[in-house]
Length: 449
Image 1 (spheres, rainbow, N blue to C red):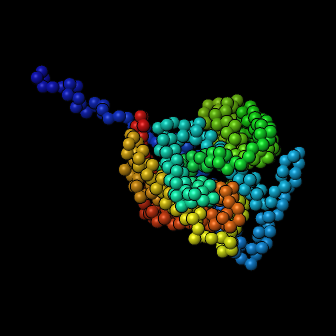
Image 2: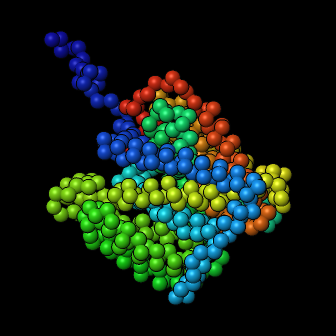
Image 3: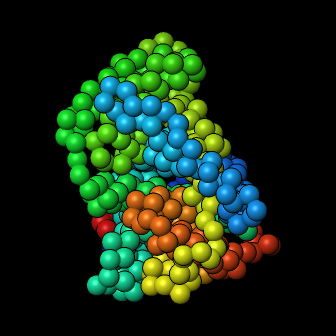
């Protein structure tokens, strides 16, 4: 060999030489078959639940605008329950649905949040940065748009109405119009909606609590602590025995909910706090492996979500949607010629996609995150448009914000804006012959974001 010829090791062009480009870390990767299976199960249940919610809301709206409207409103205002031990539990059915049944929905959301924070997409900064940033962008822009239409008026405190995303509704529409869409986009929408719900929960707790009964609030910590102690101490028992959570933990959870209701803080927050006490990585003796996540460990949160989600998406949320969507067109409402309606519709239809898409672009433009070539920006915008379906939580915030004609106006705006968001998202996402590629990913991020 001629000693004057440079060797591959000195030039750095050897075929086996390592690339000097930074290693990438993928986000929204479906890293294991177990995670793929878990996400698929969750999406299937939300898909079915979404269609039930749509049917229930449509039925409520039809009844409220039919010859049976008087009977419908009388049913919604029917009182049920009694005051006991100083707790005011004599509520009408509409409030039982909004304050009671939705606590089940928020309990399931809390379980999903706990899983994501402990071992899911939100457990690492590199994989959490894009959906978290996008969720905050999807909250901030709609709120600013609404405030722009209503600044200086008494209606300005409804700024949070167009900030929410309905998981079940959005997933149902996505599954209907784009069943073969890139799996990581589904994961993006799911993760974004979960973070969005966390933001909505925080907004409700901070901005929609008028007064606080601190005695009731402090007393609520006792059943919450007992709930968490039992779930942490006996994870295998509660995971194996399907009846145990219903018979033992549910009554304890009900007491915590009732005390939260008495405290003045919206009672649905109790569902989230109870969910946060449920272990994700609990030690499990023996060889039982129900929802196991590793040797000697069990995911009790996933086990509970599996049991309670059908109750949430199949009953609790549909009943709430049935009563909340029961709004009569006309009457004292100024819909659609009202700044409240303008702000809500524009916030959902324009604010959500602009906030999510713009934030995603900024993160990928000014950090080391990147979009996978197999995913088009048109799909990202379509997914962001679907996030404008704010149905369940938006209607809840509407009930907490307004009364009378203003509430009817805002409710009709939520339903109209959500419908327009569905139409826009469907047009952008509908690709009947799209090739399914489950091995490519939506976006990647470098180790240093």
